[in-house]
Length: 453
Ligand code: GDP
Ligand code: GDP
Picture 1: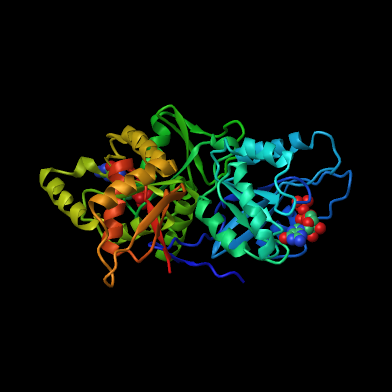
Picture 2: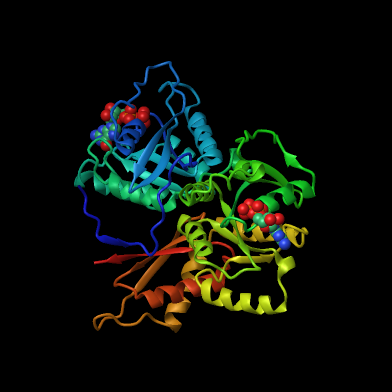
């Protein structure tokens, strides 16, 4: 349908989710009759989801599974209510509040033909406080003529209105691209994001994963079985460390020590991948007493491809002498150059040495993973860097970098808008400077470029 005049270039391609991986939620809010259900149907690509609004009957919130460009997410249709109900403004505002608590991204739908009503303004006021990303959608823009009404919707203070016609599909592809850019790869935990953070413990066989989970659980005698308001998957362990509860995902096999018996590497690797994807931060265990191997690096790639925060734990430190330590430093310089930002901790699951240092490392990594840089600060920084070190010429022309925005978190994802292609070396330079300026220790950072043809 619509041709975008931006070419989207991805530096790193994320892996697709598989299996019982929790997926993020997109909530659709707005007053009745703006076209929320029609948009939901358009997004999920099905017709049967159309739920008739029966006057006097309040529709419940319904979630549908959607897939766009290979990424899965849930779409939550926040339901309808009696169009003539008193306190409409209040109930739409409440719906928006709820979406801010539970969803990972929010779309506010406004009817472009009608324009912004008092109710739309009230909801926008609520959503302007949102820490969850909000996209403003101007619906019913069926043709060019209506397009002129759209600019007025900037007044809602929610940024650029995205014009679509849900009924005809006009602009919805571009909208979904925007949704994916702001939607985190993993959902927030529980209500208000306050639940235990999810940690995966990964590494090749025999690095000490079982020993570590046993040590961590035993150390404070507190494998927690129940936390108010949390349902715990029996394959996970809740462990209290540093005064906080953490959810170690998919540790059942480690606890029971069955993983070795079914030693097929293929299944072990699937399991590792599943655990990484179910987690927010991964602790990659490496046997410090042995040379770093291909197998270690394969697990490392899984973590970085999945875009999870990372802590490198060098285990069996009790076996490391001075010679081995020097050798290891050299191996790290050679093999782990791709992740100079990873947090490093030297531990012994056996003696318990320094295992408590995992906590600050996990916290730092997760802070970076969640971090959001205000657009103003980001662009001031960008202007300075580009002025001091402009990008190299391409085909006799100097590519201009016009603007940057942080499109998402978990992991931090940035988009640069340029007038020409940026060379890989220069992109790496920018990423390095970005890290120096804003500090993303422990988290991968994604930078992509939109080139205007
Ligand atoms: P909801 O109450 O917000 O869920 O709105 P609905 O999806 O039920 O749509 C309300 C009315 O607007 C229906 O009659 C739809 O057919 C119509 N509608 C929805 N999207 C569009 C659109 O893009 N263009 C036009 N012209 N009508 C639309
Ligand atoms: P997994 O396969 O990753 O779960 O590894 P295990 O926890 O089963 O550990 C494999 C072997 O390494 C066992 O014999 C452990 O006792 C031993 N091991 C684990 N951690 C340490 C450690 O920190 N120091 C020493 N010396 N041995 C360890």
